Image (cartoon, rainbow, N blue to C red; front, side, top):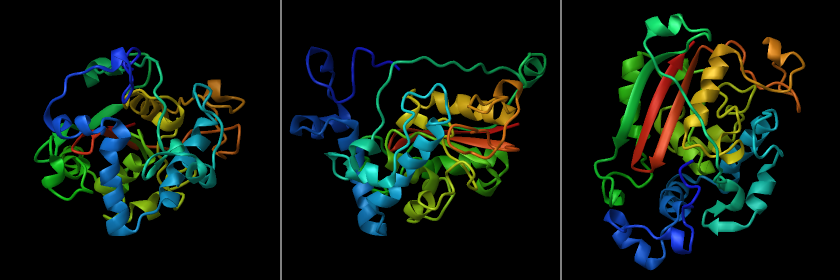
Amino acid sequence: NGYSEFRIGGTGARAAQPVRGLDLAQVPFGMRSAGQNFAPTFLRHMYEYGTTSEQVAHVKAAHSKHASQNPKALLKERVTVADVVGSRWIVTPLHLLDCCLETDNATCVIVTSAERARACRPRPVHIMGVAGRVSKPRLDFHWAHGPITRVAGYYAKDIVFGQAGIGPDDVDLTGSYDAFTFTTMLQLEEYGFCKKGEGGQYVGSGVIELGGRRPNNTSGGHLCEGYTHGMSMVIENVRQLRGTVDDYCPKAAEGVHTYDYAPGGCRQVKDAEIAMNLGWAMPPLGSALILRR
């Protein structure tokens, strides 16, 4: 994932890096990890809207269920909300199980013209809309520019939905950049899948689980499948739209799925037509992609 010899927030000789921009106001005082940089956004959301750690822990619980059905997932063990909030603190309000685990892996996607794609062996999935490298008014010192709880998806949503000609209600499944449980909640909220301030209720309602109205990160995502800087969620959504997800269904290799989502079984979303990927680099910077079958 680009960090085989350099881990975010690590120490030692390989951790040396240039300090610039916002880092000048943070790194000298020990604020250098991703969790530390994102925590103020999460804390403010909790303060303003009453969001709780228990609500957001449902993200990890849901993604762990999905990963348990994924033969390629790194972390296949299912965890509960109690497991998440009972794990040790990393940086308030993040517990250990709120955080993803960096992993070494490789992913690849091929993008070509619709005409050429029709001649390829796999059934193509079509791009409806893209919003790339969308940011808040400032990337550095972004706290002072717009509400602290606002992330880049607020600015990207009109671009990507405008290109696609659809709205959030038309999306069948999502793939969010879940470096932390809170990043999933914030993105789903800013892209309009629920009202501002209701993200905690949304992710805690069961809607993001397989069998729910709009499953999220059906592979297990960064939290459980493996950390790939968002690429694996694109691949997962392509497979979902093609109907070629690999799981533990007895006839999955033949494209036959049970859609019951029982432990040790299916994770293919039935009749999925439109999928959306929600990218995240940090609170003030993100991207988005909408795909259709």
